[in-house]
Image (cartoon, rainbow, N blue to C red):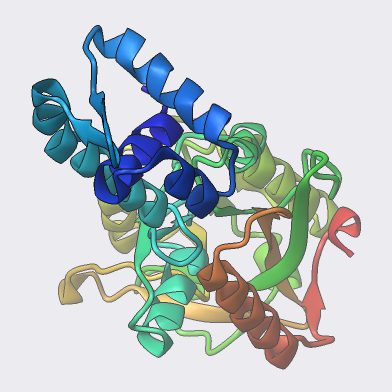
Length: 310
């Protein structure tokens, strides 16, 4: 149903005059008459009858009027629901356990008035996630962009905002379990276990890291979940894995797992935030400002990132 015709109908019902309504709506009287005629054809009824002073509602017009007003109110509510700042800001953090999820939580704690919808496209690769941003299904995502070589599709923008520093996670019986810090050279004799990794971005990143520093990083085999991985590392005197400084995992105190800093240099997993250039959501602007300011304060020269991320 043509909402302009419905709007014209309610205005004429209130004014009782076609000309006065046309002037109010900024259209000609002929245009107003055509709108009402089209609406009457669609409804198969007469809505107005002519009087000496103008027009008045027919019985059918009186029956239609409250519904016409509700249609216009519904249209106003629908428009307001997607007006900038009215709907929730929808952000993909890939996984709620890793750095983007925790950084977004910190952002929300500083901006508690923002309506935020946090999603985790765990099984979506970078191409699929960027397609979601392009389509407007999500407002932004976090990706390394390795597979796209830092290029994004037309209409999207990207900014590197996270360098998640790596730590070594080992159990109490691992040879490095008592170390206060380790270097990448220390790790050449100790295989790193990261099973179940299938996303081309992290797989490629860890292949670059292994090649550069002569590490053995095993990504082969199924993943039975983080809980199973942590349990096996806790019981092993050989298994170790990488964990991001910005990630948050919980395990029983009896596991006695150790997060050991890696230094000289510290490998970082680079993540960019990607958003649609035409997106005018005011909370998105706040988030981008927060991410870029945070990244600037944490920048350092003691880190390693692959050539494609420099």
